[in-house]
Length: 431
Image 1 (tube, rainbow, N blue to C red):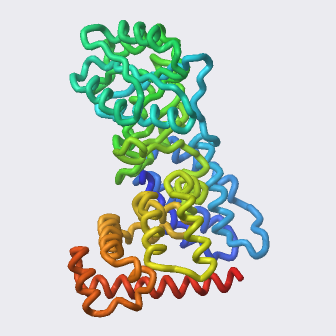
Image 2 (image 1 turned 90 degrees about the vertical axis):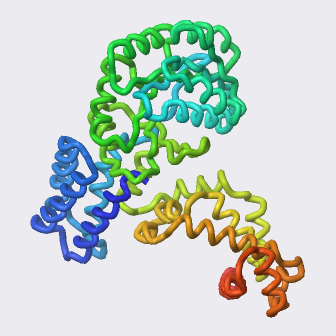
Image 3 (image 1 turned 135 degrees about the horizontal axis):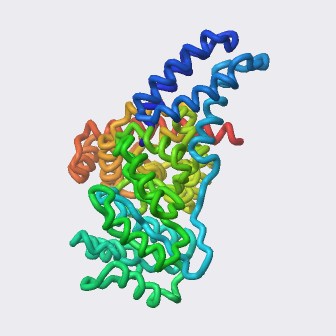
C-alpha cells in the first residue's frame, strides 16, 4: 500500500523514542529530524512537512506525560492528530442534490479514469442500491467506449454511448436518456497533459450537466506532479474530490497526502487493485493510523463482513466451541481468509503486525493455500473427519490425487494437529 516505506521509517523513529523517561527538547528535536527525512523520502511537499513539524514541536514541548504512560505514545498521538487534520479529518462521501445525481470523472490520460468510474458504479449499485447509468463521453481514446461497455456488462450497469458525435452532445442525450436513473456517471476524455482544448470541453460538460460531483482521478505513483495536475483542474472546474488510483502499489504515497493539504480538495476514494471490486472509501483517521503502524482494525472487520461467508464462519465457530475441528473446518477457515485478499495486506491492518507484512510472500502464501485445498479435497469424507486413518498408502493416494508429495501431506497433517490442539485449548478457555 501507499505509505509503506513511510510507515517503516516512522516506526523506527518511534522505537528510538520509546523508553525515554520524558519528552525533552533534545529527544523531540532528534525525532523531528528523523520524521523530516522520512517525509522527504516519502515525497511529501516541503510546505506540508514544515506545517506538520511545527505543530508537533509546539504541542510536544513541555507536554506533561502522565505517570505510567510511554512518552513515545504521547508523541505518536500528537503526530496522529496532525496527520488526520492534513488528510481531511473526516470521510467525505458523495453528495447528490437532485435525481438523477450527476458525477463527472476527470483526469489525465492513463490515470485510471475509466476503471475508477466503473468501480464507483459497482459501489453505488451494490452498496447504496442505486440505479446507475454510465456515460462514455471519452471520444478521444479509441478503446475508451468499448472498455466502458465491457466493464458495464461485468457489473450489470447500462452504458450510454454515441461513437459519431461530440462529447457535449453525448452528455446532453445521456441526460435525457437517464431521467429515470438515480445516478449518472460520466467518463470524460483525458490528455497527456492539461491543455486548453481539454479544459474547454470539460467546462462545457460541467455547464451542461450542473454536476453534483466532479472527481479528479490521480495516480498515487505519479509523485509531486499530481499537486500541479490537481491545482490545474481546480482552477477551471468545481472539483469536489479526488480518486487516488494505484493506492496498493509500491509507491511512497506522500504526494497524495500533499495534494489534499495544498488544494483543500478531499480524497474520497482510493483504488486498491486492478479488480473492479478493489475500491475503498478514504477514511483519514484510518489512513493516519496505518501510516503510523497502528493498524486499522475497523477496516479489517468491514472487509471480513463484506468478503466472508458469515453463515459458514458461524457454523465453524460453533463446532470449535464444542471442541470439534476437522480438516473440513480447516479448509473453510483457509478459504475464508483467502477471500479477504493478500495476507500481507491483512497484517498491515492488525495493530502491531505491520512489521511482519514485509516478510510475507503473497504468491507463496496463495500457492500454499491452493495446495492445501487440493490435498483436503483429495481425501474421502471419512479421512477428513478422522485424519488418524491416513497411513502411508492413503498418503500416497492423496499426494497423487492433488499433484503434491507425501511430504506435503505430512506437513498438512502436522499443521492440522497443531491447529486442532489450539482449538481445543480455546474451547476449554471459553468454557
